[in-house]
Image (cartoon, rainbow, N blue to C red; front, side, top):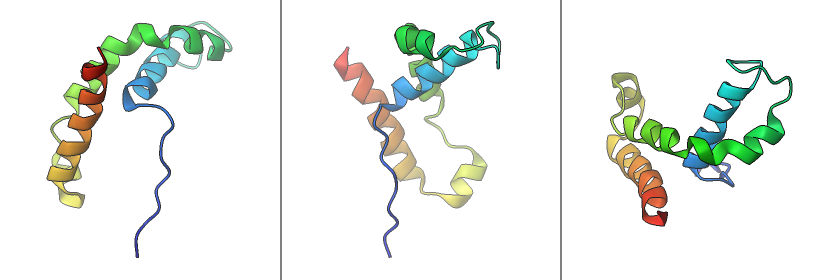
Length: 89
């Protein structure tokens, strides 16, 4: 039986960049804003280079990841996420 997965509406790069922006801006992490949502919406693009670096770091799966998944699939998925962003540049 095939498993139905939710499909993200944003790219992996945007999701990572938004996470990094939220971490930098929100009081819940390292920032000082009580509500950082609007700032994240406005500024996440400034975190795109750092987000791309995170995606590049994830190219090699860990031993725990390899124990439960297919390295070839992981490789193709991560490289697709990176290429999606670098081709757009």
